[in-house]
Length: 103
Image (cartoon, rainbow, N blue to C red):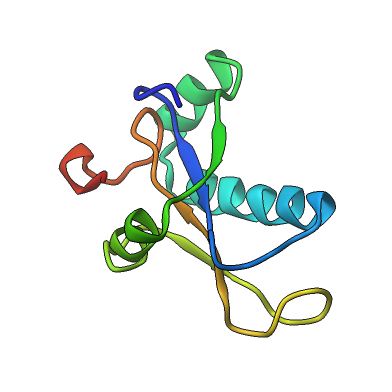
């Protein structure tokens, strides 16, 4: 993924349909959006909302979920058991979290 843009990392241990993965990525993008101030939102909008979605390696997933980055946990109403962490926001371009916390 582009190292300057936000990245949403999918859980490598959870199987999801394409539709479920898209929905969870949308939730992750929304969480990142809510964390931004007005200037950062304007910058992301002006750049065309760049965003990458990737599946993390098992080792990377463990690091990401322990990092304090925003996470999406599934409510369990469809394909995934409730409470599973399915997406971690871990980009660098527009998310307000400090770059040094990016793994």
